[in-house]
Length: 310
Ligand code: ADP
Image 1 (cartoon, rainbow, N blue to C red):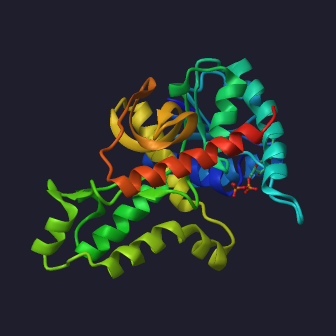
Image 2 (cartoon, rainbow, N blue to C red; image 1 turned 90 degrees about the vertical axis):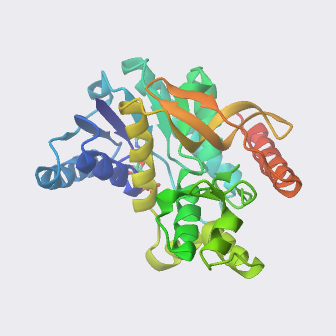
């Protein structure tokens, strides 16, 4: 399978690196308006490939995306001093107007996988610009927040994060919702599992994990200026589900008809991901506080997207 990546910056290149090394695609092609950067990333990653897989990695222009089954959109501009979040959004919407048009001209049947932030809003903008069915415009959403949640729970319980089933819902951002009430480890409700293992989850532990998930990006940015390996691997995980038609349940962002009483908004809930893109949505059973928090998160995103003019 051929994978296109538009935007060869930190996030796009980390995704390309993870996809190339894990061998889940036969080729990866980078497109960036900074042609030298795209070439350098492709060259550097292609030198890592012989150690791990046989993926072909190139840089090219939009025409070279022909035949790509998935195109990751990781292009964007960064915030200027004094610029509001909405002004930045407007400029990124313009970048996407150009990029989405170019991509669809060459590869109209591709699934679009959005990585640029604010990812839920950019996903909804892409859905509008492309006119594609919602299930073929997928934002990375809370896939990374969910991985952070599972990782911190696994660390506390001293078990593999892969044996933890817990999701972060809603916005990929400050209003996200950690769904504690339906979290499980093995097949057991989380709290019961934790007590049996002698690692109970007190309110203090809960607060610490909540903070660890919610503020992970801020802490990483303080130390190294940006986050990219985690999201790069998350994007590769979504691509794997599509490439191998795995029907995995992943928390990703898609424009959804109704979530917590809010209509037509892109945010994350668990969804079944396979070769066709999103095959089904799943609304988890939540307690009253979580329902209310998800409603707040969805409303906030809805207010923002309504302020964006395209
Ligand atoms: P991030 O950390 O989110 O990856 P970067 O600034 O490292 O952010 O990467 C964003 C990339 O998007 C840059 O390499 C930039 O050249 C690219 N880009 C910006 N606008 C466009 C555009 N219109 N077309 C293609 N690439 C673009």
